Image (cartoon, rainbow, N blue to C red):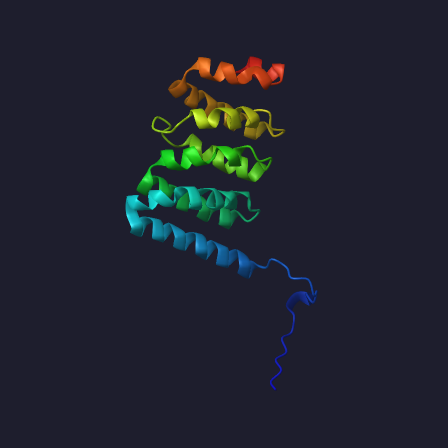
Length: 173
């Protein structure tokens, strides 16, 4: 029998399993590897978008900035390889989640992309929900994206989705 003893550093001796930096680095490496795989596979990787994109984008909710940044890089690779519209069309359900990091990162990302090829109808309801967020920054980001998306689907389409809104949000639109 062999016994190995490791001394805990910095007084950390809890039995509970913590999410240490090693886990963060492993996740970053996995996300980076996924980006390399997307580039290597080329446009054919588009067929896996329904399986890959939402779990990938959910990493934007992580509290670790490095994980979020790596995820944004991979989303850019996916957009370059398979088309930004594929990513945009997949983000609606995640925008509806009440998570400020996730919403903020998605809105910043989509705010930099060309929405002309995306199915902007898929974003109407989630964007309207985001416009009611508690965070002023997120509301402002959503207003920018709504303005850009409205150019592609028309004002009337957005007006039809305003029925369930608070009056103040409806008048803002």
